[in-house]
Amino acid sequence: MQLLYRLANTALGRFIIQILFNKMSFLIPAKRLRETETLIAFQHPQPSYPVHILLMPKLAVANFGALDTNDPAFLRDLVEVVQSLVDEFDLTEQGYRLIVNGGKYQDFPHLHFHLISGA
Image 1 (cartoon, one colour):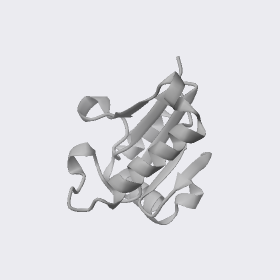
Image 2: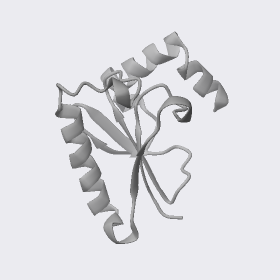
Image 3: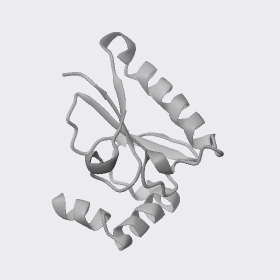
Image 4: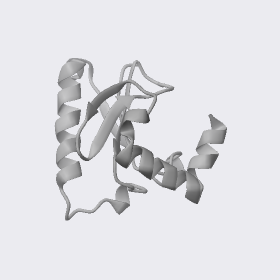
């Protein structure tokens, strides 16, 4: 897994990630929960929580600061998908968090959100 993280942090790795998420998301080997024109949501391959879902834009966005505020389609999809997942997994009562990491806390060089719940 560490090798994949190192590859993802190279120019070639970022290019592959963009192609994979933007054009060939069907190849991602994960349990897909939602997919829209702008994002894909799937179970984290190495979950740290009982509910651990990743939400990633299909377009290349390096981090939260790089989001284009003039193009609200991704943010609209993000809110709608998170709301539907919270309902589907019945997370309102038990509680949940939507997390975005940045800077030294962002291990993967592509914007992604973690929807988590549980101990």
